[in-house]
Length: 428
Image (cartoon, rainbow, N blue to C red; front, top):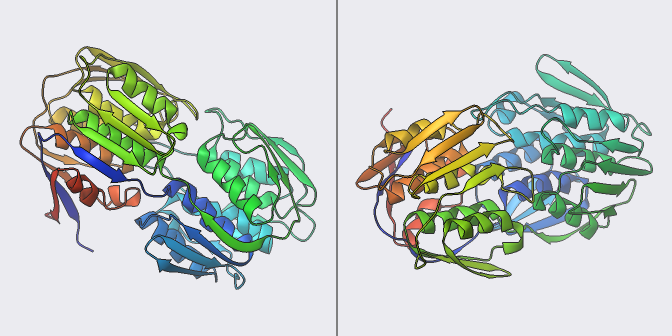
């Protein structure tokens, strides 16, 4: 497939409503967990994204049925599951392939999954995944770049374990251990569990299929093993990161944007930050309107932290906004301290940012100027698109395959809000 770029003529305020898609970060573990269910599972509100397609291909290669039945609904049937390997070629495209590790152990008693390496935002080790799986009886070896995991009949045993790591709780480790624990004997108690809505959605999915998980949304989960899961239907939660991105798009263009079909309660830290900067918000359960008819904007100091605090996945987008907020703002990144590759590209657009170790200082400027920029990862690409929307002149964002991993038709949605944005081939 030829490389594409997104071309933006900036300087127009965005106005209107945009429908928020289902959450990629929730859908991926739900797809993996579906192979533990005895019968077909119909997942609705699933976004059409490259990461979703990669996970669907992986499940098919493992022997499961995985087919789109509507534009946003997948049917998954793991009754034919027989494969146990997630190869390097798949995992290198999408780190979330690691989510099949727990279900394969619970279902087949073995798994061979390529160890994910580092990425553009720094190393993201899986030590907590392996530690948690070993705690409930999994034998693990690392050979030739692969995680070789095995747990024969009766080997997985429920027990209490702690999943807190040096950077706090891990969403991926919590989900993987939870799914593996469904095949254990007895009850597994995870202390230090991640509290993110995507983890709670997995808990709720398991319960909807006949499982028994207590503590969704808290840092302590109790998973009853050995229960038979039956087929059914389940709707994926809205994407809180996409909703936040579109609200920031309205803010950076001095527009008036409403995110429809979102969950305001899942993004309170972002809403608080936008309100503190000076934007007016109208908030209800499933919609948020941001408009720029209020008073002067003021700088803020942001620290990324695990949920329910400010999410690292909105850090780049908010940074783009703060480049145009008068005064001096700071952003401290505590989750991925190297997640600042987008700063060099924002500087090309005329931003005034000083980069330190894990922290940036932003001096707000009056305007940005369009220029060619290069996306390095999913959220960085979104930040560059937002900056381009506000910049004077034309901004070309290269390597937009990053953005297609996590945003469903973002250019179409932005165009519906009045943006002058289009795709075209990228010169090789």
